[in-house]
Length: 384
Image 1 (cartoon, rainbow, N blue to C red):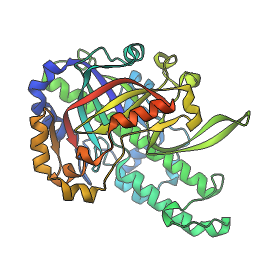
Image 2 (spheres, helix red, strand yellow; image 1 turned 90 degrees about the horizontal axis):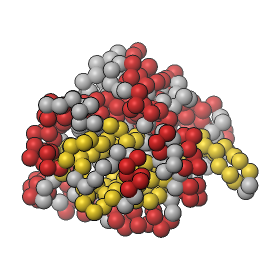
Image 3 (cartoon, one colour; image 1 turned 45 degrees about the vertical axis):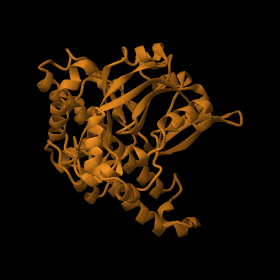
């Protein structure tokens, strides 16, 4: 997830929302198997896997300020491209700057009137007031990450017997973390995470270009800045107090995201050290999203929180109950212009297919693991 602020207002953007969304749709390819505009060789892709978003700085797609606002500064050091299969590389090297499909999106949002809950945190994150335009991006490592998972799932199924591991579901295939197979997978997974950091950064570069073309201003004039970029399908080595002793743990976050409070200040950008880490919680393309902040109480959940509202119905059920073209029409009447790859894909992502985001955020606050900063409502969406 990535959240980007601007100094534009809804008053400036809404009259041109169709032009803006359609231009973003052309600049940021979406859908299964789509190719990006960044043309690099498989050999150069090795550097992307190793350096992540930091590769983007060297190649003109990022500023150093962008890098400072990415988890781990956009590069997981344990990445080892030698542990990634040729098939995974083939699926990833030409997909930089693409959204993909499913629930991935690029959304234009405005800060809701009366819904800035923590003015100090909001100010630190660049949220200036109601009506401000922000951009949220949700996408990952595309086919590459999926292929890495598939490759190692098969390997783990073969090696589990020698480690005495039995499972009830083949999708839970695993290996001990410190085994050769476990370490190989961790190093390959870090490559996928680095590709995802780079992918979202290239998308941000395209967003800056499109906004500049549409509004005839530079990205600096529009103050297009990164609030934060954080993973939500990843495993990380982190240190926690367990029974009074400091221990290094492997924290798996699958469909969850990091929520460091101020006590983890050493891992946060300077301006977030006192408020905690920004947490980007997506809702649905109909209902809106939230910007939250992590708390020190989140250590009870190993500094983890929800990454989104979560589904209430399967994609198949949503397609049975919703017509994509009708949904698109209804949303436009409510002031949300969505440009999707397919009508079936839109139907899958209907608001009714997701939990009530207000209930989700209430639950997270009640648990003490995150707190509200600002509510964001959609006005335009590029849907994978």
